[in-house]
Image (cartoon, rainbow over all chains, first blue to last red; front, side, top):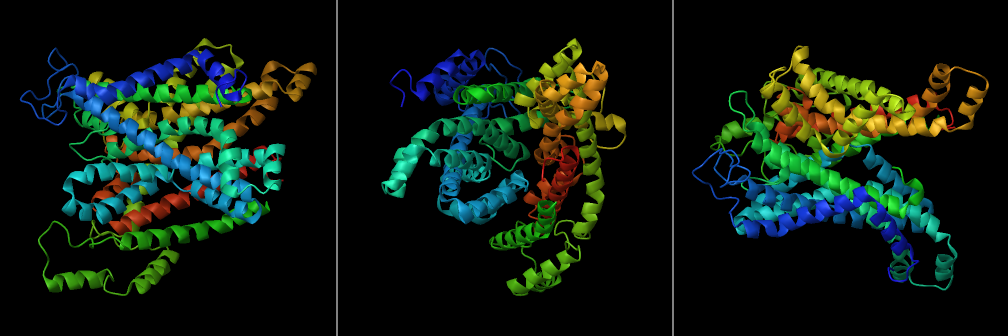
Length: 304
Length: 304
């Protein structure tokens, strides 16, 4: 779509690049992704290796200090950021697939199907989502984890991450479904889609070739907006101990470790301040990119 | 009014659906709550236990028994706290969580509404400063970051407030702020947007043209209309408040429902878990119905 200078995608891109906050957010995000992606390799410190120097404050040897087992905090924060971002991105993708499928079917089918599908969305909206994620993780831990642990013990952490991505994705799709349905209802009445219907274009082709390209802007916006909320939920779960398990770390579990070291006798601020600060920075960046994209694709609603 | 009544009628249906889903999902898990970690109980003891909790009956009958008890408001015995029923535990923990929630709600509204109003009017430097601070908190400092940071600064560093536990107003300050500030930010934003929109509208110009004082214009003609977005945000906010309370009760060791709920996942206390899931669903449904009534009262256009 991007190519000719006046295409909607091109215009949106130009609007986005004029938004300083959004561009700053994007830069922070790219840097964080690079740090999380290749940082651990460059640093060359094993985030799980216990050292002799426990609870050392930040210094030349350990830039962010060490934790209670003498593990390097910088290495753990980098690997934790990698896990948080990965869960956020994949979880958002899962929610995207469910949300788009649900919204398109509801919007394109109309009538009774639409009414029922949207009633389900309303019903789910009225339930506490995080409770479902917690139940889902319990089902995984008690039901599947035991079986997998016997056969492939090494694969368990990866499976747990996958379970978390699926659980989080499968509760975060409601807004996406609503927006996609509304957009589909509007687009369906446009002449080119009416023409495609009249010409008897098969449904899959109708969807992929004619509808989807016109939904891509909305999809991109809500995908970006749902990443921070999935990151937040993941950290929330890991903070409570229901997400990643030690020795694996995510930003949430690192914050929980830092919080557990809070006591009036000895202040180990670095254990809390570094992961918490990074989490705040990431959320701010993700949100400003999302807001910028939304303003770029929906210029009328710019201020929100 | 008809749709409100039909929503009310849907509450028991929803609770039944949730109870059924939870019951069969949790019963599908391999292994009972009695056969973990601990050395195997003797056959007789185990049989007695199973009989006491009716685990020896066919699944269908257990399900009917659970539903029957549920209809009478009996949530059954807790598996971890052997001498307590789930109803007992709810009776002890609900008042604590309710007061925490009410305090946080009061902070959110009491801080958010004035800040939103004054920053929309744009004449108060304090309101503007508070508004930008709140926005920052609302966007990038989630509850599990804010809580430990407040403890680090105000309890460990300055020693103004106790680090944890519940009871007395000094203990309530930090948990209330942790939970309340995030939502105050959201409320302030909605209030500000509502105000800005209403200030532009013809009826406000008409009121000014009639020579009404600015105070009367704001109080009588702007505020009631500008409150609509805030009140409609209350529904989703209450669900998030619930999620946040899990973290806050965990950080500050407050003996509320959230702490017990999270613990029930680790001890696999399924009756307690289910009881709390149902309780949360019921509370959210009731509160969202009340919000709905309130909205219709403020803005009679809705629902007619």
